[in-house]
Structure formats: C-alpha cells, structure tokens
Amino acid sequence: MASTIAFFNHKGGVGKTTMLFNVAVEMGRMGKRVLMVDLDAQANLTAIALDDAALTALYPPAPAIGSDTVAGAFAPLVSGAGDVTTPPAAEVRPGKVWLLPGDIQLTIFESILPGAWTESLAGQERGFRVTSAPYRMIRDAAARVEADYVFVDLGPNVGALNRAVLLGSDYLLVPMASDLFSLRALPSVGSSLDTWVRQWMTANSVAPPLSFAVPVGLPKVLGYVSQQFNIYRGEATMAFSSWIDKTPDAFKEGLLDPLAVHADGMGGTLADPAAIASSTAKVGELKNFHSLVPHAQTLRKAIFELEADDVIRGGQLTRARDSEVQFETLCREIIART
Image (cartoon, rainbow, N blue to C red; front, side, top):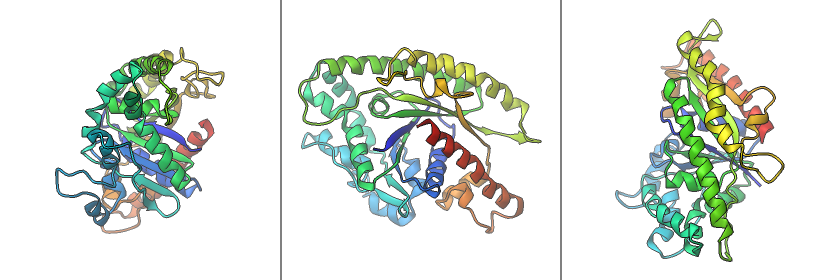
C-alpha cells in the first residue's frame, strides 16, 4: 500500500509545490511510482505538471467544474447526488509519475466540510462520508496506478479541507523557508493537528457502522526541509543561517512536542520518525535555484531535467544538472524514514 505524504506549511511562499514536483520526478527516476494529488485550490502543481493541451481539455469555461479534476470527484457529495468518485490520473512521466489534477472549484467542496465535521462528532453517517472523501479518493487512485508514494499538495491554511486530508495522510512533510515567519507558523500547525487528532478520536468512538473506509487520523511527522537559502563559499549566507540555526528547536517546540503526546498505535508517537531520526528532524535542504525554477516550470520540467537552450547556458546548466544530487539525497531520506 502506498505511503501518503502531505506537503504542508501554514506559511505560504516556501517553495512547497516546486519541491513536491521535483521530488516526485526524482523518485520516478529512482524507480518509484508516485501519484501527485493537487488539493491546493490554486492548482499550481497542475499548472506546472501538465501541458497546455491537457489543461485546456481538463477545464470547461468558468464557472463549470472540470469532471476529471479533484473538484469533479467531490461534486456528487456537494450536490447530494452520490459519493466521491476517482478522477483518472494524468500521466506526467510515463510509468513513473501521475497526477490527480486540481481545480479552483475545490473551494465548493471545502464549504461543506465544516458541517460534515460537526456531523461526524455527533456520530452521523454523512459526516464521516464527506470527511473521509479525500482519503478514499486518494487511496483508490493510488491503487489504480500501483503507487509506492502519494504526494499531496495543500494550500497554506489550517482550514477544513486540509484537516480532512492531513487526518487521512500517513506522514507530514514541512517545507521551511529560512525566515522568521516560517518559524512562527509552526505552533499553528502543531496546535491544529493536536486538536484535530483528539477530535477525530472522539468522532470515531461514536461512529455508527459504516460501509466505507475512514482514516485512523494518526499522521506522523516525517520532518522538515530547509530551502531557498543562498550559498556563499559552500555555506548558507548569514542572513539565512541565523534562521536555519533556530529551526530545529522551533520545529520541536511548535510541532513535535504537541504531537509526541499521541501514540501512533505501533509503539511510537506521531512525532516520529522526525523525533527519533539519527541526527535531526531535518529531512534535507535545498538551496535557492533562482531563475532556474520559473524556467523549469514554464517547460513543465524538473530543474535537473533542463537542457541547454536560449535561457540556460554554461554555469546555469551545470547548476541545473547538479541540483539532482540534492533532490536524490532528499528522496533517499524520505524512503529511509517511511
């Protein structure tokens, strides 16, 4: 069964979607089968993964919902006509990487989730059906493509959709920019997850007999990835290094400590494997790739897939090729921790 990893931080602008896409492509190059799921209503992951022809075919004129997107999958629940469906996964790299496309209309499904959460806590069947819909859709799609990993892209908020998705995930991976506000976002993530896990345990204790699967609601912390820092003579520049130095303690206090009180049912806690890693909760680090990022996104490529062209030449091409070492190292650590 695939391991589902949610890429999430309450702080936006940390390079989350770029990291997810590049890690997915690198995992594919390493022989893993990866399903990407775009559950950020901005659908940036979909925009950088699929070409223009595929995007045009996916989305009808506004404000209609694309039937082959995640919003289309949830539409029967929104209308009351049925249950969640599973959209076809778009092949991003043949036999290696797939995508469940996002949609701005995902916000319509999110609007019914707060009510469903209340219904779940009251032991009502529909509440569980709606709340578990992302989990069931992801699980079915992963089985169809025989995925080893599912990478879920989430928006930077602690709203109802992210609550449902995180409770259905096996692991949480936190992309971190080297700045003050990334650190300040951590207590929000930790306290929200602590509350959600407790409430879902309560909901499960009063659940009626159900004919569908619901998540256990025990997401474990994989760790964090430091990124977007500048390098000078092989080291992070001083402006970034001070925040990098503060990250381990801030991550422990803001996220690991609140989740360490929850058992994972396997002899550990939800703070694992980050809390028991051999050296640090840091899974890896990625430097600032500057102009290589938007150029790669325009071409729908990973940074390390870039070839020489009118924009990428000489030293930049070397940096693009060398970036694969960083992503491969990150992938190997993810594999080891899962």
